Length: 209
Length: 223
Image 1 (cartoon, helix red, strand yellow):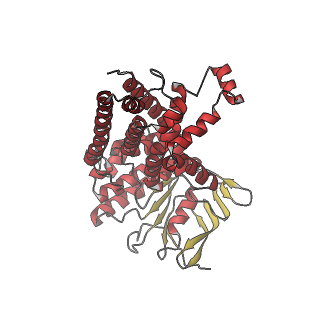
Image 2 (cartoon, helix red, strand yellow):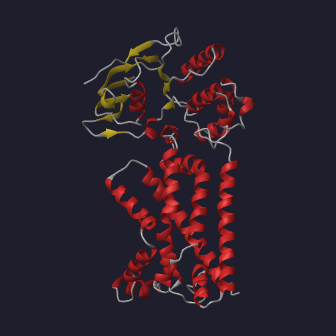
Image 3 (spheres, one colour):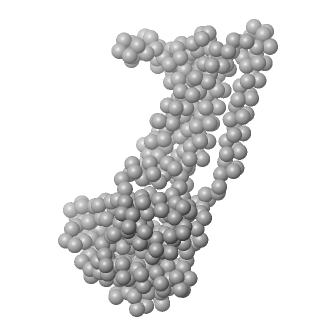
């Protein structure tokens, strides 16, 4: 169980936006985060990952306190051991597809399985600049999965995929999440994208001071 | 033509570039991260040699390392280091004088890398050092090469600061730029021309090399 009760003030064009989130995520669940642009959906994922520090509140994952503003506890991203799919993919330009996965894990069997799921077996020696947008996005997803995370945070992870590829990948990912016991939190703008896939939905509204 | 000044110049430029690579990389990385007031002060100090007359820098170094100073005496007694009218002094002055040529391009290159690259590496459990070594450093290679070549070329052309702290001691501090000045003073235009031509050619080839390397670099998807 991941329990979040956090708050963060963000500087925005129209003033100060406050991102306030109070939510529990069941183990193994897939939650879709929606909401208008600029309401802090990416910031929320980054706060959970430890890449952005909330101003106040608490994050507890499986009875381990990841963040507690009052007690000044803030576990580093490395110790949270979660997967993160970035909206801009954040692929390493110097690494090939295979090197991306080898950087994350030494388990070659697991790497081969991921490559198959992402349909990137024939692109192992390619660097990101020689991959299409969809292939880059799949690589970003595979890299995040390479560490077999118990929590996977995905920021618009299917935006560059065609419908067929998206459907196939989502089916494979569901099986993989079940197998690994992964809880997934997915930010998505497309209302239909995760229909029938997500067990829960959270709407991040507009709070402006 | 006496080749010693040219050899000394190349040795000085090589050592300076190597020291600045070792010192400059971590410093540029640190400066590229979140800004603070102390970083602004340090950056201003590093940039000063770009705008300060080299003779002013040389003069202060000369004062700072004069044999009358306690620090100088201590350095001499403990490490047998003399910074005035010595090759070590030239190295020290060159490191300070050429520092902005190393730090500035490398710092900009680090800043231009998307923050998400480091963040992705951290979420994979990698430490700051692993991230620096495997993700950041390989992705700033063209800028690093440019910085190293510019530092080398700039050190080849040093004159004022070198003359102030090193003087004109043949075989010790008489580098090529000083040999040119000295030859002209002695009306030996042939030697002056030879030294000048070699310096011009070497620096031109170096700078051209950087331009060609950067032109034929495959465009980064980050650009």
